Amino acid sequence: MLQMSAKSKKATQAQAETLAKKVEHFTKIEIECLIQTFNVLQAEQVGRGKATHGLDRWTFRGILQNIFGLTNAMMIDGVFRSFDKDGDGIINVEEWIEGLSVLLRGTLDEKIKHCFQVYDLNDDKVIAREEICHMLKQSLLKQPNEEDPDEAIKDVVEITMKRMDHDHDGLLSFKDFEKSVQKENLLLEAFGTCLPDPTVILQIIGCHKFLPDVLNLIHFFFLSFRVLRSLSTLYFKSNKNKETTHIHVHLQIYHE
Ligand SMILES: [Ca+2]
Ligand SMILES: [Ca+2]
Image (cartoon, rainbow, N blue to C red; front, side, top):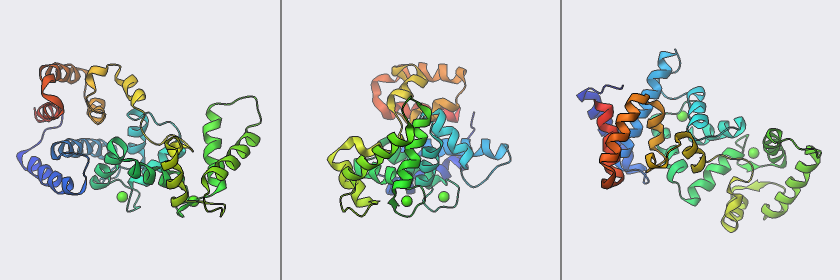
């Protein structure tokens, strides 16, 4: 259990206050929770002798796989890129909060930006045919069928380009992608799952009652069964007082 000294509690509150001005989808209390989770994750990582100034790929991949149910390695790498705004190979606390804000509560525009970044594998600001091919191959490998996958992929790529390449230059620019998704929302994750699926998350927990908000799962993951049990008791006691109370409960447990 994470013990917080009065000093580190103050530091977290100050950090949360600064971040709350930048990130519009989380309250200050929620940001505090997420900073604490970040600190727990980082401490575990340091315990394994890894990076000390943020979350590395390995830690981050674990979160995406276990909490958000993402399975495709290429998509997971893409989500890492989308979070790692300064491209230093580490997710710092600010990148963590901003990234989760898009993943959990992002607007369509924010999600379009996120998905485009994930799908732009070589980060040259356009999605090329080869990139689409590569991504679709990864998805198809997981669901092999009897037809020739290469032929099927080629067909899909051509159909996709016809549908999404609005300026007909043979590449999907951000504008092409944005326009296509705005017209047809299902195209948001056209080349692979890179956003959390709420139903997968529900399966992980196996109990809808525990889920007032997806972000709480991150806490569940790191709590022992004993704590989970006391957490659920506390939650049911405070169930009538909406989400904020629930998050307070998490904080109380962290501080115990
Ligand atoms: Ca970074
Ligand atoms: Ca590209």
